[in-house]
Image (spheres, rainbow, N blue to C red):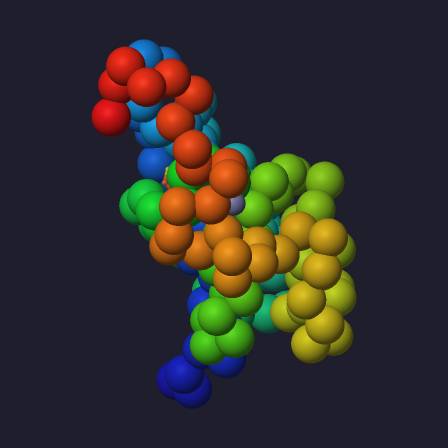
Length: 122
Ligand code: FES
Ligand SMILES: [Zn+2]
């Protein structure tokens, strides 16, 4: 079997509502991951592009998040309405959907979106 050409890791993490950080899949339904999987299969990409549910990708404040490898392109605030565009533009066309990509200034650092809303809880 040939290796996968791309891997899409889609955060499916849940947290309790009182948690200090938000989470990407509060309902635990993995709707984004299932949508990618179905739409990739419908385009004949099964075996070439894999959509995996992942645990927390540590970009929680920008979620729902996903990352496409080997491109290392990160997406945030992804909704079900964005799935077709990401597949068509990026996965098939090689052109990331700029309006949804997370800038380097948001990845793995304390960006403005990560600033705590209150100072009472870490
Ligand atoms: S919960 Fe999705 S990145 Fe942390
Ligand atoms: Zn940010």
